[in-house]
Image (cartoon, rainbow, N blue to C red):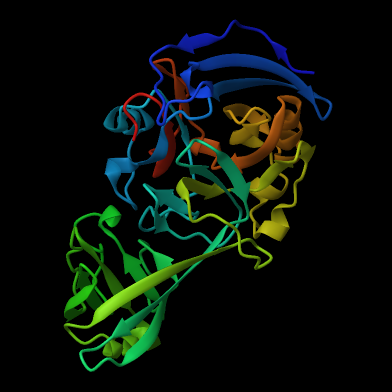
Length: 354
């Protein structure tokens, strides 16, 4: 049974959008001592009332950049924050690996793990979210053809044959040279460019086709109209109602489902021993029975131990976030857990976050 060792620290400046009775409560922090899986753990926790404003906090407000956690907190005016999706921290561009949804837009697609999502009213949900992006391009003669994108706002690997979508959240440009880029503004194809680090219009997006996918660009004549559609499913392929989710971060694996420990990393696509059996610094997020959210970090635990800890803390649903040197938690105007590296993305709560 969890034992609270310190009185809560209340952050009275928390605001809600929209205002609800639950969300008028303050964000609070606790250090909790938990005995689980035969061990004692000291856990830093932050309680977030339902309805507290939340968004994805991006390093430099772009997908594929890195920054310190305090700088991300400051740039979003947040009262609380925790590190989010796994990202490439060692080699190449620091792109995320997991799902990211910000302001109702899918800004990165992940292909594994578990995702937590927040609706406009503050309701939090959790699932093995998969997103597929397809579209239609129609030329001036009225002929329509289909297209799809595998990823969003990600740097393609060398010699890859792939189709990618780039949105303004990527930054001013796609960030690399290669392939054939199709530039759209207000749903209209404005130009096609080969092997260039093209600019992303603020009122549009860019599709880049590389390798044997380059021929797909032939379907996009200048002046054609372009439509796109997102399909939301779980790992089993069943459609799930995520259309009204405005904020989401994907990582994993799942730790707790419906109040019970539910850990199966390999079934979620994880292969790294750091996730499968090693002990390390962990970050996690939980949905509580009253609809509030709990952020948590611990200095050393296996994933199975981490799941047991989150269950003991009262989680109804819980998932792991990026950990190790990425593990970071902020609230009460200070770092509760300091990351050992720059971060790519976070979840930020309260304050002036919108």
